Image 1 (spheres, rainbow, N blue to C red):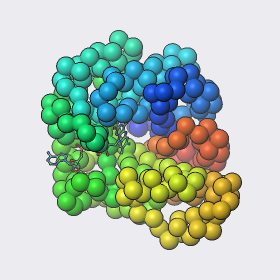
Image 2: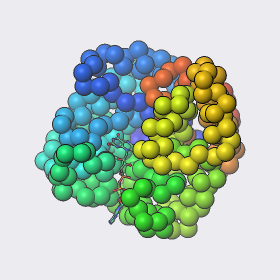
Image 3: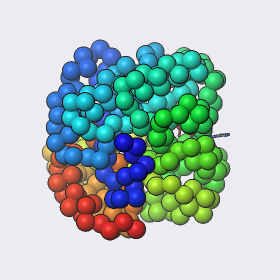
Length: 291
Ligand code: FAD
């Protein structure tokens, strides 16, 4: 099933997970998959390291297990910056042979000490390549607070439109903690002709280290309400986790009320957190009339 077809029927609720580190066996993630599938998300996406050192074997193995073992619709991420056309061809063939029809096409981040392969410079190049390869539903990434390398939002949105024109049938946002930045972005994207469904990427923040890492990596702005929460509970990990869960639920309720196309939950492979959030929001997501 192609994920794009879901958006006309419902508000989509999906999860994101990552494969275990190369030094850990793949089986270490199976308990997480088992717990997450029980929450019945519309699909689960599986990340793929941009390093080019492997060919996404773990991403494929997890996507396959989701589909075959649990009957969950998988989406495989695919970054292109460090891959040649030949490597991408091989990966796409592997996906097809294993029945993976949904791909999140990404440029990926440059890995220190590695030269980009240069066959695909931007995600739009990969998207049009996958489209001509055929057989896949293709999603793209977008940035409510602007991609860190873009000079400004208008330029970034112009490049986003190129991804949609190349064949992205839906988009998933980078995490954000301020819903107003998402609403502003969505309005500007629509005005620029970006007319595909946009899922809002929500990351429940559950510990201080994670917040610091995320902010350095993606530059998400932190509303006062959020920083106050972190300061208040930073010495009490359980309370900070519960406050982070409540914050994410609050964001989701507001987004669903506003008619968002979908929620993509960055689960960080934490089924406890995913369960708490799903239990709180599943009812309203299902009840939300399609806008
Ligand atoms: P692009 O769309 O190519 O954009 C990157 C930059 O190039 C932007 O500044 C854009 O404005 C600019 N640009 C685009 N086209 C042009 C052009 N024609 N001329 C000049 N500039 C241009 N990374 C991974 O390695 N693995 C993952 O699994 C992964 N999953 C992700 C999931 C989501 C939902 C998101 C939001 C990000 C994910 N990332 C992942 C991170 C992503 O790879 C990085 O954010 C990366 O820096 C940009 O990827 P992109 O696909 O958005 O690139």
